[in-house]
Image (cartoon, rainbow, N blue to C red):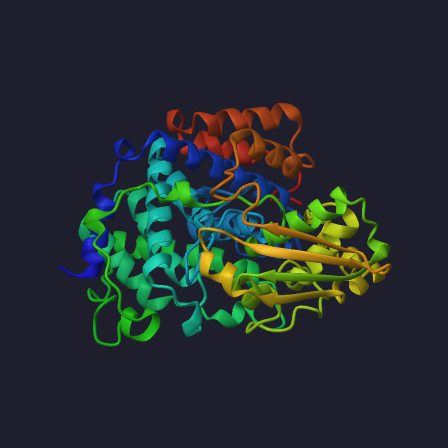
Length: 459
């Protein structure tokens, strides 16, 4: 049996009954979190560009766009996936050598589910499959240090989730996985050096491609059966060799994913919380600060602290700001929060934050690195101009595994992010449908998401 067949059999046998009550609740919380992120992103610059493209090119109206309108499933998968990801506020999963955002799979699964006339229960089951596949591949087959982006594993998870909700058999699911894994492997340059719109679009593009692969398999197109283990296959060229028996896997990994408290890159969360703790505990004023020193686990240093993925003190655009620990901590100290408004161009370029971010230094710490990913440890030291020194050590943050986000916490986040596009009645309707998602049809759910004021095909 090939690795692709083994995975396809896992997808095929997965069922709602296999998902524990805890995991079912976790799935709904993450759907709510994702939809809040999506609605809050409706006026993002690349989102407006994508809307213009959809208006120009159209597409058979099988799948609904969040905010209004319909188009072909692949375009809906890309657009809705871009909404979920653009703010960089959606959930994450931390493995020792990889970090991913499993809710990135939702855009593709939602588009396919509406096309297929699926139920909410089938949607949640397919999403649980996608979470399990992406998280477990991140555990055993990290690709970041080999120069590939973390959405590389997502191509398999999205293909698996879409295949599940389309009710493909084992053979067609294996072909979907084979096509997707052969054709769509993303480079890590997406997140190094000067950053671009593609940082927020790589994952939705992967979802769209995986959906396309699953539809090709549905219609009978075949792919290389030994996509994983074959000569010049995924293991040899992308990930290195690994073993994973999907017959032994469950659908519980969603419960180990984490929710963002701040609109900031996931590895920054504990440092931001710690910096704000110091500010409030000692009534510090930003103008008093002479230096901020952060010792943190090596993954955070590499990605957002100025390590191997490039300098983080030159910050001019959103994509650079939300991947600069220096900027995120500085703006938190100045504004008492890190939300979408902290990434507006006029906020990023203001002198106060540009000056303060250059007073923030970041170094890797061996002890914190050894404890990652079970902890996201760091130590923040703030020195004032008067020579006073304040220190805070953190092991986690609100939203991490040790302090998981509740439905109520995420509901508040959803209400804040959606408030410009949905009144209280509309918010309650969405909250109610997600809370009982296993009892409704996908079309009922997406119809609620289509009635925002921000976008219609005529605008």
